[in-house]
Amino acid sequence: MINAILTERINYWCRLILNSYWILIVISIAAELTCLVVIIHQTPEEIVYFIWIRMILPTVILLVIMAIHEYIHRTWQKPNAYFIVLTGVSITSVLIIVNPLIHGIAYVFALPLLVSLFFYQMRVLVITLICVLVLFFIMYQFSSSLQASNNLLDLFAFFFTMISLFVVEVGLLKRGLSLIDYLGKTIQSEQELLVKTAVMDKLSKTDALTDLYNHKTFHEYLDELVEQSEVNLLPLHLAIVDIDNFKSINDTYGHAVGDLILKRVAKVISEAVSPSEIVARYGGEEFTIIFTEKSLLYAFQTAERIRMLIHSALQPEMENKQVSVSIGLSSYKKGSNKSLLFTESDTLLYEAKRTGKNKTIMSTL
Image (cartoon, helix red, strand yellow):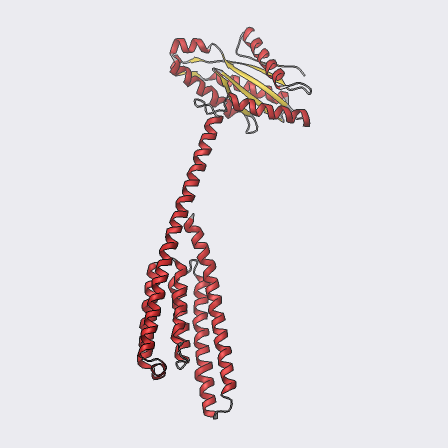
């Protein structure tokens, strides 16, 4: 995540750096035009020389350099630090060559050094410093004008300034990288905490065995839905599903088989209902289904389908015997409450048990 953010910021800064290069070129052209006004009284040969050598030729070179880099910047998806820095080195080199007699002109080489810091790479800093020192040394050797405007003390001052700037940038780079590393670790810790919180929240709301909502969460949802049903007159139905003769299953085949039956019944119920229904393990061998914004007939048909699916499955751990469930289904009536709704469903479940089991009994509106 940190790398993605950093890449996005580098893209943004690359565009700003290119814009600053354009501004530098415009300032350079404006300065040359000012000089043209100053030399207007010189000989025609001097004026022509100035226009071609000091204005037109360097301007064309600078525009070509920028055009090449603009093409590369727009073509490549990922900005290249070396092209950005080399463009700055090229521009400053042209300015130094064109204006060798300006005292201190060599210090414009500080620009690419500063630009190289934006990419958070030690290698880019080192290569930029080497390019700056080598290029200045070459230009000094072959330019008598540059030699005339810079004595030995000026050379030492230039090299000392560039190296000092490099040392400061290295310190800033290390500090920046340590802050990025700290920020990355902080974000990672926060993400891990969010994951743990989400897991704990899920564990607090679900039953560990069946992965359905637990008793507490069922009541929380039912409270909210009863309130909404009362205010907005939304249909609300509650089904209580109980596995028949579950104690006998545990006593005969063991609790491990009993747990397996609970999981299978839970799976059948959760797969048979739509995403808008809320299924919970109420406790022991009892499950609850809350139907919202559905008709009582739809809820009854769904409950019957669940009952038949459970009863039709053979249980290998029980010598291929079948398991059945009894279901009580009731509807919320305006002016009633959660307790009455649950009691009615529980009473209908008891009636289903008392009258033969393996059936669904619903209330009448």
